[in-house]
Length: 329
Image (cartoon, rainbow, N blue to C red; front, side, top):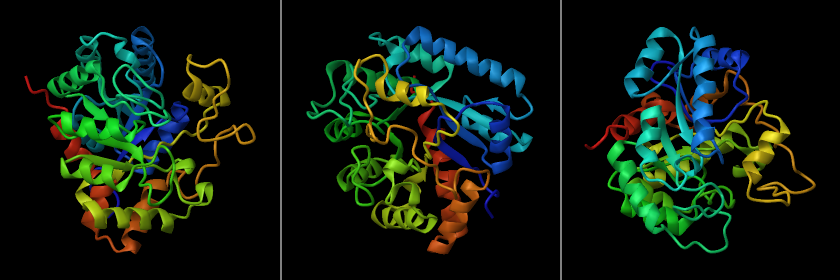
């Protein structure tokens, strides 16, 4: 049954408000990885934590903070949605390695080494030349391993991703992307990356962002579940989850901040274009409260058993995070 186990969405960046928290609760999702950073520096990241503290205070009947997987179990018992934080860039640590532990203690559980551009740590997937992990990046990977902060390479280029998998003493994740065999987007991942990731115990969260999907916003539930099935045949069910990359009800200026940050005077359209500069149309079978349950039922129709579908809907995320968030010291 869909809600028998733990249900986790491995990445969202929605317009967070009480109405949406009510939708999340109705969906049966027990925990969500919420992006709090795209390009924010350390000081600005602290303000994002403060904003979420206000959300927790005003909506304590619906949501609660997650610092460990025990909190996810508690959220399920109490009928709430657990929220755990991630950064889609390494900008919260500025150029100071000590801020990794500071941010981890504040509740930043997951951090990407890059967004789409070159960072101080690694190369983003939009760069023409991938120079791999920098000297600072090697130190950051070691420190993230030590303090129990999950490394996420969703927006990173291939060489940087493969080097990170090799350098990290702990499994890493790609929280929201799809295989390139399904759709050849810069953000999607090759068979080489997926095999290396999973051979070291890592996890892939399948994205529902239309630019990452076969047929874009017209991608059917059947097509999506077939993509999962083919990936499971290649790397195994136990390494797969959902990282929807859902961005519901966000205004255009949020999309422009994601794409441009402070680095460009000219408008960058990311995976869009000047003629198609807005948010892509959401998938009709996922944008409401029944989205995750629709995927569960689609996986069952695709031939997965209830245990396998439950692992993909959240069980694998739960196990991966349970292991990865514990400090080594």
